[in-house]
Length: 133
Image (cartoon, rainbow, N blue to C red):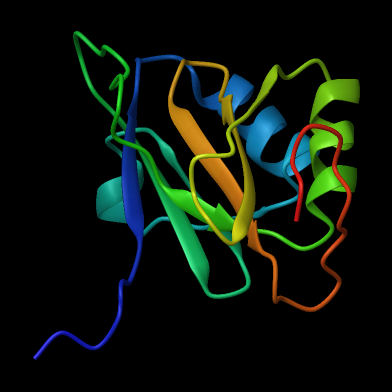
């Protein structure tokens, strides 16, 4: 029986690890976690925030998925979006999920990331312009 999601794997092109590290640690605030030596030889990098792990694996001929993406729950979503914008990351708000505020952003290699906060979560910030509660 499935108990939980252990991690989400995203692909990345060869040689992109430095840009990924700068984004996932420096912008998103995740922590890089070590890969087992046998897997580290393949390249890529792994990151964690709380119980969430994102694994970025190297893929020759990489093309970012157009729809596939992880959905990452955040607190203080407006402040988080403002932080990403200040760091040069484009944020696109989407009001298509009832009961949530959410936006999309891309990582340095074009992977799509969704950030969301339910209206009933702690530290919810109502009143986002254009997104009524």
